[in-house]
Amino acid sequence: MEKSRRVLLAVSSLTGGGAERVVTLWAGELAELGYDVAIFVLNRREREYPVSPKVAILSAAPTHEEYLALGYFQRFRVIRGILRTFSPDYVISFLYNAQLWMMLTSVGLGIRRVETLRINPWEMEKSMGRISRILWRLCFRTSHAIILQTPSQAGWLSGRQRKKSVVIPNPVAAEYLQGEGCKVGPVVRNFVAAGRLCEQKNYGMMIEGFAAVAKSHPDLRLRIFGSGEREYVHTLKEHICRLGMEQQITLEGRSLAMMEEYDKSDAFLMTSDYEGLPNALIEAMARCLVAISTDCLTGPADLIDNRVNGYLVALGDAEALARTIESVLEMSVEERGRMSQLARQKIGEFCAPERSVCKLQELMEGRRNESHKKM
Image (tube, rainbow, N blue to C red; front, side):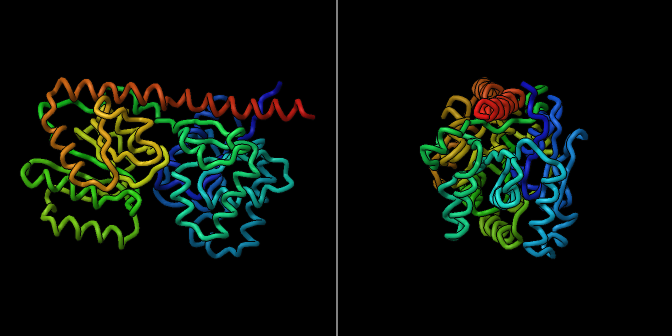
């Protein structure tokens, strides 16, 4: 049976979060396997994730401002025209806006839509209005297949939807598993965090927990990488100042060289209230950092075996975070070295890019074969 050759991965933009990073990794891996791959974005932006030269980037508008200037009917016509022209066998959609537009504009074109869950769906629905929830549910109900990041996400799906779902963990970029990773030094001084600066990530808990320890350890540093809404960033800066931590906790902004930043660090912190399968945690563990994360639904517990290859702490518990940071400071070099190697081993087994894209390929080819059998 001839392979399905054309694949379109759809996402709102190529800046910012973990979903966008997965899009670029999957696109590149599929292109290397001989697929004709393109990425669709609503509009282009500055500081996009790098994309393989073998992958085309298609957009509804060249800039965010020009996209906003389009009326809804204009957007529909432009996006449907892109789908007609590229004519993909499969569209794999990420996040609500792209998922909704792909569902609406692909009607009648014979395109197989694959929806992905990139976050805790129960929490996602809480942030939506009634109409948005109905439309988002419809995306999954009318799809050909559904990709989950973790088995626990299946609980959000109906029985029929679970039958067409498959778990494919986020891939980690191959370079994160190469080389030595961070060096295990004699003492722990440098902590790092990365992710979108937003309430979901609960940086307030992180700042409080770290500050409780750092007050008696003036050599400790926490660098937080990421961008977010100006008002929220201002709130975090004020929080840091109130605690007198301006010299020990810094907001570094977004970086396109996070692997180098991880390698300068000793330990990684994540205090999210909810996640999907967090790419920042995956990448930090791949670089052999000792990781401390909240045990939120979903994601961290799929990666961290508590006190074996990292640490899990209760949601919102800054005191528990502080105690765990103290535990990391007290670990011997041998203990940290063993934990960091087990962390990398876990990511290598669970999130290897070739394993991830192989599952994706099996999903597409399996579905294609099934559709031919029914004809």
